[in-house]
Length: 357
Image 1 (tube, rainbow, N blue to C red):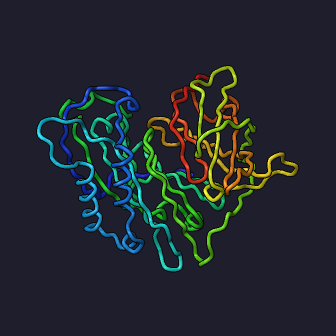
Image 2 (cartoon, helix red, strand yellow):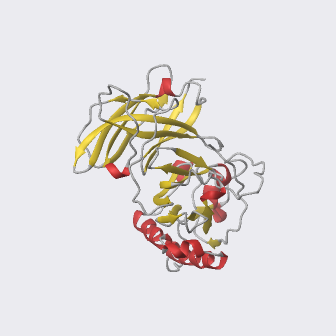
Image 3 (cartoon, rainbow, N blue to C red):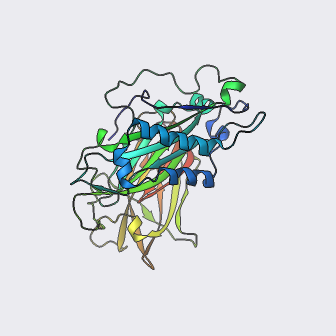
């Protein structure tokens, strides 16, 4: 399900002056993300006590934005310096009790340079990914302002790029969202993993327990469903915990195998129903997300991945998928970015060129 939004809104923005930046037509080459340490500091700043999330008004949001701006700008530096690194970070309350609450708030903190905005228009390339860890369902929303019409926009990288001075300026903002502005109430129920995606930039993921009872969230289950695509098991290689993704560079006339390996705690993934006689004791819900610059509708493939217990409460999976067959009729020729959404993880991006019509 995809919903549109407008880029207009009530951002209170701080203009951050910086030095010049060399022109570059490739967003993935020119983007410079904030360091993990600095990003972690902003993420901690967004981790408010639960009551503060629900009490946020415009004044409190502006005050929070000022704190974020001071963190990302640091002390004044004499002379010219590089533009501020890009940042996408989110925060949400760990618990939403629907017996007491009528909103499901999410905060977005963003540092966005003028050069980046020219290369990747915000209004045409931003998506919230909401993964229900209890059911395996995944939904996407472009979180534009509710009730506003999407203006007709020129493609990213249209017209001349910003000059050296303007390319060194950034906007710093913190904005409040409510998931109920776009998602029906029944979808925002259970353990939700929320991630913000801005084309080739990915935020942290926050997990929200949104329920109406005092019971601890369960593992849940979702039916495989006619739209969920089976992938082929593959031999696992020794590796670090987490998710490893390898995507072919091109989909053309020959098979193009995507390969993934998963090593995660069981509580971080979603198990779905295994078919009768399945050779693997567990099946994981996963989704492949393909994003194209300025494309309003990403391509989403829901997958069923065979897995097995790995001891100490962990689960392990390794699988392949032939993208040539899987994407036939679903994705047009051109350049894409590929993400794998599995449990509370979003892995990617990896570049993919599709040459078939």
